[in-house]
Image (tube, rainbow over all chains, first blue to last red; front, side):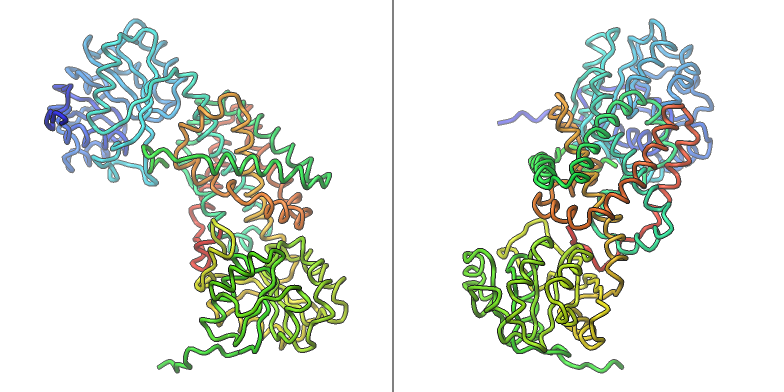
Length: 304
Length: 304
């Protein structure tokens, strides 16, 4: 028989500061309440309207009027802002950070977040554990926050050399207590992998829809598009500001993946140009077998 | 009040010959029975096992041992073979074709099918009405045939100059009687549109999965892939033989779309290389708006 421990999280915090109370920040706050991970939640957002909405909906207990004030007294700090804003935010809050506080982020890229932490936090980078929960929805903003957003979802943690094991352990327990399934890898491994499986496909889908719609007959063609188009192009509907940030933050890995892709595409094109149809079929077969052999991880069903 | 006409098709055939009793041919046979579109169904396939299975399952009433014999006495003939086999098949059957028979196909490309009809049928091309039902499933073969496959699905008819209006009308009524929603356009318009919204995306998805899986870390990366990857790459799991045929049959339009796509991709890449992030965001915004403004036609929900 399994021993049931009870509903309470194995790790608990007195005061959770959410910096950036959007979809992810708001959902973390709700999930933390549900799991009794934190007793009290304070929120700060660049837009006071956002924090006010979060307060009115009971997502946070208190509004702070600056990042510096938000982290005062907090033993858990969650950064949930666009990745390119991480450095600025850390600069604003660093002098208020408690020495025992654990700081985590939720950014889709890790190399640039690590660089920001190293340059802004100095010795305090030991407190900063970079994280990327593979969770999201088509709609962003605090109004779409939900306590179950991280249930069964993969959370990648990319520890810094400066992190003590105990901070990494506490971060792991915190995510697990709100439903996450934690994987650990280096920031470099993370960024290479997500460039390949997420960031490049977004770039390709944006380019495809752009090319299609730039033709004189583009609108007429779109009328005939079916489910193949629907699925292939779905990610082209992503948020422009967020995806610009991701491409900027992970530029080098995205460009590296793009070169590999362009080589493969050129290989297909050359065989088609030359009419080597059995070679074309062999290339397709390879891709088709790989795709058919792939099983979607159950842990990331709703990632956008 | 609407006048209810009853269940019977407005057009009826004595004898329907299905050439190629696979998913589409078998489904047409089942749908034709359900709609009382045809009294008797004869089937021919290159593989006798396929025809035998269709007979045992009641999908057809009779097996024919050649295309020539299958069309003997038939007033409706449906070609449901790979598009590149159309010419060969027409050559086999042309001397058995009844002068009053309507001949239709189901191919995903139309220019090459029209050329095959013109070269193989001569004056009899007047009887051949090229069709493309936008319907399919992930699984092919007669075992997956179903009477409802064309329900609510778009069927593109690309009439020949030689077709009499009455043959085109009869073809339209036949598809409508089994649930199709008919659009009429030229073969050239058809092939340009489907190169853009279907054939090119398949080529891009094949190339993407090929590139991903050809990297030393490809398998490790795939483990981290989520729903964005799942949808974007779904069509890369398509049938290699069928897709080789489609790319071959619509080579020129696919290559033309590929050039437009490569220009768009190069535009994105240049802005990323140069760090023009507001330009990158503007490009993404354009694509995202187009994609968000697109409504999937209700008439092609299950197209593969």
